[in-house]
Length: 381
Ligand code: FAD
Image (cartoon, rainbow, N blue to C red; front, side, top):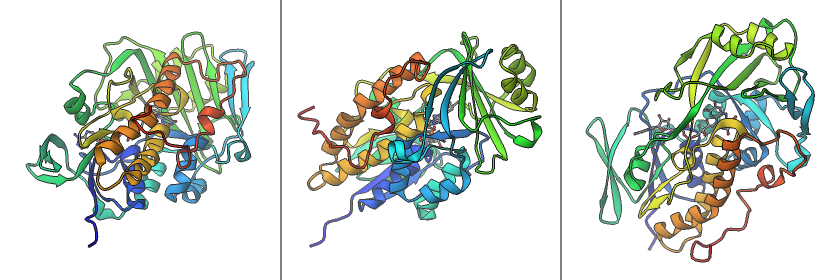
């Protein structure tokens, strides 16, 4: 007699939710994704995919599509804010970690992940409002009054996760009084060119990261970190606007290359940088968390989406490895394999020391292979 397929509901169709839907399909799970948004908007932002995440994207089958729309920077370049002196440069040829370093438009990455899923698998306009255990499964309730049942639930619902509140308890993410300005702009608006690297300009109490997002260098992106009154907060952080004059004033005195970029920018967004201490646990019975829902971090190492995508590969491997439908054990194993790594990245990202100088070996971060790293069992961890 053939065994019934395990059915899993994923809450949230961000980078982590779409990535885990793709990896679960690969191991034969029946997946449905429930997203609160009515439609996907092209949010103006760039995103860096370091080799640890592009290796996972290769296994998901989107690497070639992404290469066609991404810029491959020569290096990780770290410079002093005013003099431009190089603090540290790490060339990033693909041969170094066996996978590319891609800088792309965030929406292009999202579209690539969406493209590998059958459209009927992703349900838009479904805002989760409650979860209830029912027999050997979980019932999900949505704001539109509908309910669905699944054998298990993955909360990939981001930094303000409701699933997290339900299984760990309510608590606000940390806002340590820093905000990010960001903009995607046309390169033709500049009076020159930026370096063909992902450059981080390190100021005394602020920084700015700049890179191209397209292979022909037609567009570039910058994202900053600036001190700001900790009361400045918005939940709908992706759409909040910033003031370009304030932004330029915040970077007065920075190197001419930074000034050139900011002078070409006429419109920017602003959002609060949120993080969280590592959680006591990531799962409760048949419900588990993934991505920013369980390990939100500052963007300073460009690892938030990357670790969500890594989570997707490891969670699928853990589910595939358990006998029968011992999904709770799979979830414990997933946490045992992921938490030490994501907690380490959260801590370094919070301190904002990564690549600020020194010569430490980043292989543990960029060389990580989520498809093949040996898995530990939670009972032995
Ligand atoms: P999200 O992308 O937040 O997705 C959560 C989804 O859940 C959303 O679509 C939301 O609408 C949905 N949702 C929420 N609540 C509900 C509900 N109740 N019901 C249904 N759906 C719901 N990471 C990198 O790897 N590289 C970078 O270069 C990088 N740069 C960054 C720059 C900045 C300034 C910031 C702030 C972040 C950056 N990150 C980067 C981090 C990255 O954006 C996040 O870590 C990543 O988006 C997390 O993905 P996620 O799927 O866990 O959550």
